[in-house]
Length: 78
Image 1 (cartoon, rainbow, N blue to C red):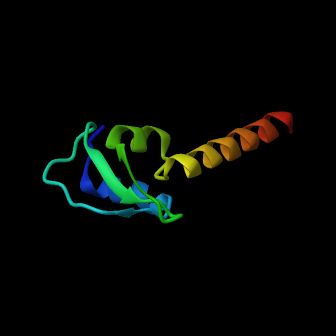
Image 2: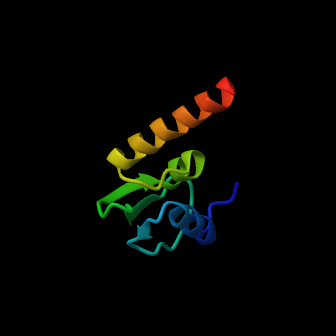
């Protein structure tokens, strides 16, 4: 897996987040600072953004995880 500026931009765009900084080096340990779609400024490691695809603040991340869990349960049920 190659951690690049393009990958970071794609992940942030998926969640409607806005990056706050540009970085010289992109790697899995990079702490990315961004503004969540709800307006809260936060940061997460690039690796976690890539693995979970949750470019949101802590509150919005929890809501999204619950929504994904419910959708999965509905798929299994049907």
